[in-house]
Image 1: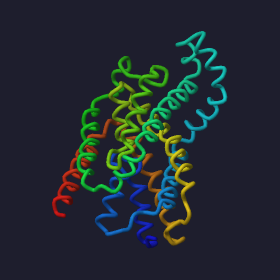
Image 2: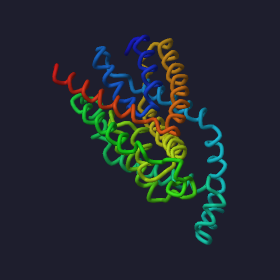
Image 3: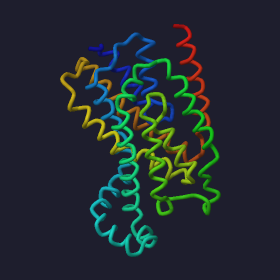
Image 4: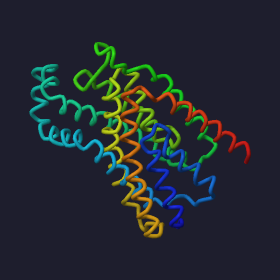
Length: 282
């Protein structure tokens, strides 16, 4: 059991860091170590991830509704794809994105299941956070000049992305299950390095997170026996996670389109130094 105040603090951290490319899990692990908190109860983790899942759906509701509608067109799309290939993608780009997301999700799911025990152990190892933060900073730095909208002939939008691109992004998302490797940072950087334009890179990164997070919430919720947080603290944490998550996601999508991710690379490197110093001080 953690206190109501601790629950609210963890909710605020989750909301502020879930979408920014700086790793929410890494920050939660650090916060628990710094403030001497007990590990956040599984049920509460599920609740906070549900809050940010709903925030994603709210901010990207137009795209989500389009993809849900396109899902029902998949049988027809597959027939057209076999017959017409590129023409089918041009005619129904939303259905193509649904297929890309399915491929990415399958790859991520395979990694998550195959390395479940390793990933679970990483959430209790403070010593490894520094290189994970550093890795996130490196991939963000490498992607800083990609996806430039001034060169439209060299970038990929919905209709130019490939199934191989979806595999690479699924791999990036799978690697980011490690706590201090940012899921959003790694998938956005991967998309940019693959040649996605900035708008599509940002939107795809968060759309592809929906089935992954929803699946994790469903799987983990089966293990829940009690919330582990006072009701008032849980409500406050949920609201903070949802509201702050929605605000930061909206801001981040604008920053991605403006090519303003380099500051997050420097922040991740600072967190890597801080994490390493914390290990040494022990």
